[in-house]
Length: 272
Ligand SMILES: Nc1ncnc2c1ncn2[C@@H]1O[C@H](COP(=O)(O)OP(=O)(O)OP(=O)(O)O)[C@@H](O)[C@H]1O
Image (cartoon, rainbow, N blue to C red; front, top):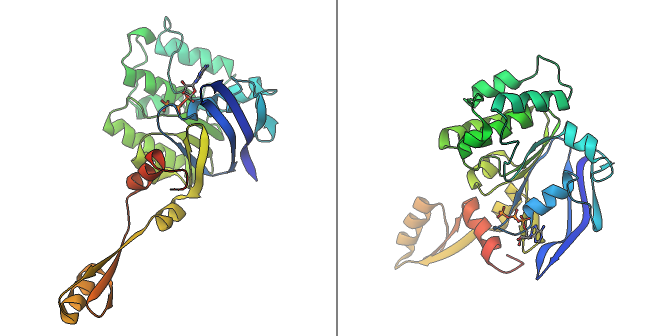
């Protein structure tokens, strides 16, 4: 059963900007990575999912609820990290988390303290005085503290140091284990590689591929044939490099890293 459904969603900002005929379906319990170069339409798609933008063409549903019509319920119940964290600047982190807890009518024994400790968030300062990383931690705590079943995360590790990025990846793995559905927009290939089941790549507002990590890897394997002087040399080479030997030639298949594969889509033609 799908938890997130985007059907033929378009938003034309003019001049080739926006999103065009985007359709994505994310199963319950699936972690879906949404990748693409800057300005390709990731945040625009996510803002439709959160009910911040009314679809002009197409539609989106979360748990079969229309994201626009049910935006109050969606915004209250989902875990969401926005691409740009701009909260109520004059509040302290503590006040902000209290405000969000009340907005969501959370019981006292929620995961707030656990999340604060885990990400070493210091919530006592005013938000306007916090560093980018500290604000990002505040965003993470507020998105996860009510233990939501569906998480929509727009570049969640942006601004975090490598230690905290790693902690976030561990948290994602635990959430995945618990069966949570996660829609993750990211520029961090390692984060995507370690957490996502399937990946969608968007470029210039158009979805250019949606595939499992495994299929992407298989489709983008590269083979090289090396010619040697003698069959004996070819045989030795084939042994060393796990190749297939034919007379003086050896064919070796190289597994490419996901980063190299993504780059094919980011910069290349539409059928990379
Ligand atoms: N309200 C708007 N009015 C006009 N153009 C907009 C508006 N919002 C976004 N755009 C344009 O639409 C395109 C997609 O923007 P979007 O923020 O969705 O990209 P993104 O993939 O999230 O980028 P990044 O990786 O840089 O965060 C960009 O060219 C952006 O300038």
